[in-house]
Length: 481
Image: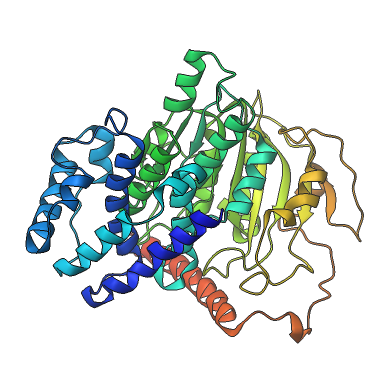
């Protein structure tokens, strides 16, 4: 999509205009979201029925002003849309205030956006354009947005394995910019002729009820709301903390797909959910409990988790045992390093299906090692969907992991471990067997800045873990934030 790529690059280059105003990359993308929303509404909604922007507060009204009047009107527009517009619009513009201080900077942004090739952009898809902008933001290390953005090749592979179907509810309790929900929606649309093969009531369900989630960070939620809207998804995206009581009130789902944030609860302390059997300050272990408890019987889930969740003792051991009782943990994918922006943490995807009873649902766990002897992904070796081809083939065509599979032995990447064998390991799921042949091969080392990112990622998680532990030892109250 050449036009989309070119427009994303042009929009990103406009960030240079705002440097004198001291605007950060993340602030810039938020600012750009507010302006793009107005322009995209004009381009796609001539009658203003779908986007429901109030009269006198639209793109042409902003374009008709100049200088100090334009900046003054823009501030008024943000306030009005955040308080007087339709609920979805209000959510996108909630507490909006511009960081732009110089009128000519705003004029440059408005004029540049207005001059883009919108005809071609609409042809290729405005949703894809906005996704491209979010991906650009995440890949820019200075933006700090990588923690909210899961690489799209990984999301697409997970969705193709889990296979969401029309009529199913799909939840992401740590939605970020909405990547999992959008990919699940796209998967369904591609198999139903963009929903036209479904009955009218079924189409309405897909647009309004099928996809929902939670996002903790207000600015990230507004990016996600814009993203969902551009992909014609109107499901609820709540602002809040899944690990607080509101998480317990989420309706159970047929499918849960998520990549929770790394680290402990901010500021230490236990999650404030009172429905967890095993209280813990480890955010990922808490999210894991939410996911397997939040599935309907027979429901399917995939969750991205760091290595420590697989081997952490005490409460971690109990939670893994509880997971394997209540669910069939059929597949663990050990992900390669270097695929998350500015994260040096080693990660995995756990695939499981909720049992119809709560006892002895896991008989075998299949582990696919996509990490050992893989390239050092980064600038020189981009991470693409093609890298998942062999994993998806061995995973099989059945989304619950019940396809016939072949143990590839000690020399292969895909192996089966029985439940009794895992019990003997103390329910430790950090299982590897391949010899690392790249050790000592300096040609395979990543770039120095990528090594530094990896070190910083490990240090960040370690510091957060210590923070949480010190909070617990000091007897601090649980933090709901």
